[in-house]
Length: 462
Image (cartoon, rainbow, N blue to C red; front, side):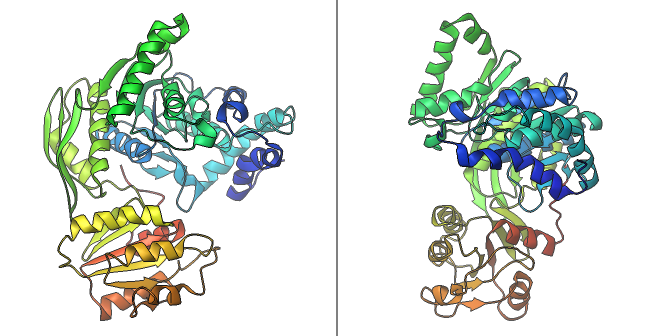
């Protein structure tokens, strides 16, 4: 059946998983995930990933930002670069980009049809508890698009693991491991050793360079031990770990990191150069670590140091929507997709760094759906904000809590409520100027904020 709309292609992407999920009795990735089905789908679609240059990025924290940083730097170096990430903020096509621009809806539909025949053929032979992973189906569409666009490099953000990720069917010459922590234990295994083994699974015979970003000492030791064991094991394992290894603190590092109203400011030192006076409009020390890893990758591709002016320009204008992102400086306006207490704590910690003496007036605009931890987000942000405003995106299919204002006023008596984000921002501009505006909540709220400030989610630039 011919697919006629983007929503129909999205339905196909999730169809296999939604069919199988009621029948799944196991949770470990090695038991339920079948990346070989993604390989089969790619091959039935003409093997569009063959002879392409892929960079895979995995880890527990910062893999999306690192992927974006690598792709942006390569773009500023003059290359045509594909980027495949997940999840998206508002529109599914955000997951597939070339030089920062999302795939057009018509191309998404056309290439969705191109993979549908193979998808249906595979689907017809699966047991009730087997499925084609949504990321794998989307990857097939993306690979076709990147081949059509004749990208020089493609950067791919892995999912929660590595070994059994659908993205891991790609032959990646570069592998990047961002900080690892205990996560997804029901899917990756009960302890750090299992999690690390999954992450290191993106190192394959085709991999020539491996970059290990900053890790906690215990985890770094476990990574190095795993790599040594693989080298001393079977011939197949030895072949898998012959990549040249670059470690944070040895081949590359960030230094002089500070969080300021203009962004995260830092320097990067590599074996080839020292880059000073760098600023990212993304907040958090870990963003400097991500940038250091990205610079190391791009230096190796360039086989030399990067142009310092180009690097400053690239980082200074980089957009990575919704991740403690500065979207305006008059006043300082920060957006973040926190929808529960723990993620809001990170925003609060950043504000305490930016405003240690409380001299700046801070307003937090919060739009968290009813089924998320809206009370927790408000409670945490009330500790760093002078005023709470509850609101909702101008357009959303989600339900927002009717008692949000009452909950906010238990924390700050003068809290306000506006039906839509645009109304809240208009009120602040006219009646209550603030030094800092935090816009925190669901992905649609972040998308709404980006559009309000004239920034596109579909074209985030190089």
